[in-house]
Length: 445
Image 1 (spheres, rainbow, N blue to C red):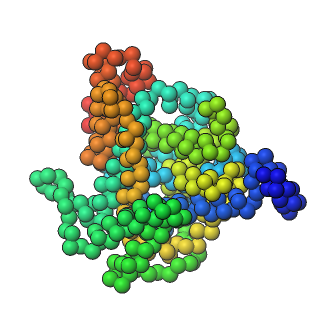
Image 2 (tube, rainbow, N blue to C red):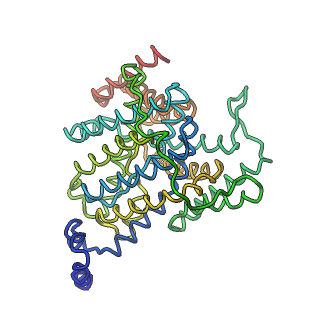
Image 3 (cartoon, rainbow, N blue to C red):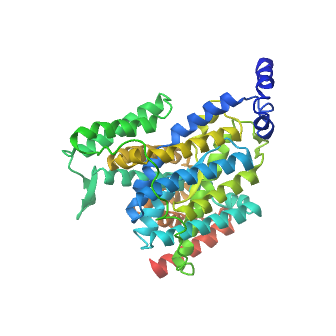
């Protein structure tokens, strides 16, 4: 420890501002450690620059512009987290929320992607307000723990069915709704190969395992014409097709409120889980409370607004930041390095454009498995707790709507508690939300 401090003192004159601003000596770290941690975090989450354009492209958005928006949103938002909150946490467009944006808001609710971006922006504004006025803690505490777990698991199941459908492992059937696809199709096998490769590499803690899996199955598909090589490096495409394209024309419709709330709900609890899960190893959490929590939440809410403005779904904190913390990252300097790496990624647009759907589906299926682990933590001894949680989780993939799953979860939870004589366990906030969702279903379906 004394040796590390002495080394820090020796290095400090080279970049004294970095040591002072990020308080590296107090955190017992140095620039080299923070750089390695930043690179580690970046490699574990860079898959999003390939996956996000593929998902949002389903809405009609220009995939090149989405690629640029993804990189810029990640770079700017992560730098804000670094400089304002001094947290070793990186941000990027969130998995799960991007699927909700594309498949529920645009393809199911028939919003244009411009209107959906407006909903994302509004959710960011609300996130900002509840962060500034400290309402967020009340909101989080009022939502049953098991419904929080069910939401995460349900989003995972939703991603799973999207991945299986995209790779033709699961197809539509008039009698059974879904059935097994044509398993003679090489696309299905390449997706499954990519999935098990990603799972194995992550089990072995190979840095960038998800990215390696995506690139490996893409390379395998090249000789068979299943992927097209367009180069690796070039100047980034134009962001103009998605920049400042927000459309607030449906802001006074009832479904708009449901969409905004659903995005906010997912972002709030996903963000809370990430902050707690990542920072408890850094010394930032003391007596169950996070230092500079307000700054971290404001940074995250800024990310949502900024991302929507430049053309991507909700930008949020990434649990993959834990990989950088495990590598020694302790301060915002880790996040600052991640930000610079995302700026450098702008040059790899041709590589992102050649990634086929089956390769990104492999990553989606892996993320689905990680998120579905929340089901194991549900309280299985109380049927009034686990039954609504299961309803919420399975409704999301089966209705192709995260919002519907959340709504059915609140309604069944409230009614089950009342009929079981345990109405006092359902908070006023939960009851109000249940009534709002019931009215929504009754009026708009």
